[in-house]
Length: 290
Image 1 (cartoon, one colour):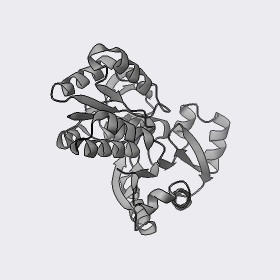
Image 2: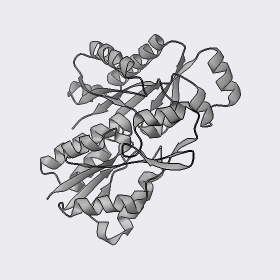
Image 3: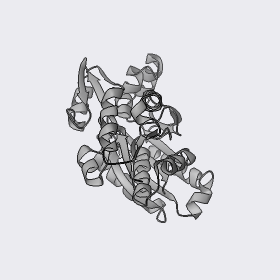
Image 4: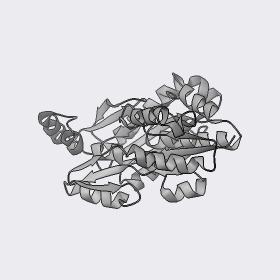
């Protein structure tokens, strides 16, 4: 049984990488001053941040189910089934919309498995790589789906936000809190534990943010992921928003702190997260691997 793997651009996998991997990537729509763009097709990372920093009205939107269905149908011409891995339902309604579409549209019933495994960005990318590996081993769509659901909570993301401007703009901070935070030069460290973007800690310096994130990973490895570490099944990766140089430096620090754990990727954060936190952010994630 041949199973196709499809994801969306929230995974950080580019269209060129998708061709090399033999998968499909649905480009996420982005609205900028009322004009519709598609991530990595008609909108690059550079263009996105240029607009964001110019105070344009920027928001992300759900893909049209019919457009996604066209990609599913194309994949089903050469495959028996599809495993579709979108961004976490905790961050968008996209997943639930497409689950309903797959379950009710006759041509996709029993053939398209929409996975709500609570992932975004670099952790979502790992899910895609796991699914691809399982598919190449001959696992069927249901087996791949079950594995991704069973392991959905086996990941953590910690994100340092460089500016409070975009959290305020998105309504996640009151103007008064944002003003005080800016005055005190606070850099919040946020977390994604499968669901929403939540506050984890407050620091004032980049070095303190890095230490906080490293200690959070250590806590995960010594606690909830202790058995997975012992089995050699955890990986580490870095993400950033227009902050590649610091991301590369942080990678070296992470590898020094955790020399026995496999390091996989340094990727830009997806635009769906970036529009809420702005440029200059730095993130580290730990995630299970198949």
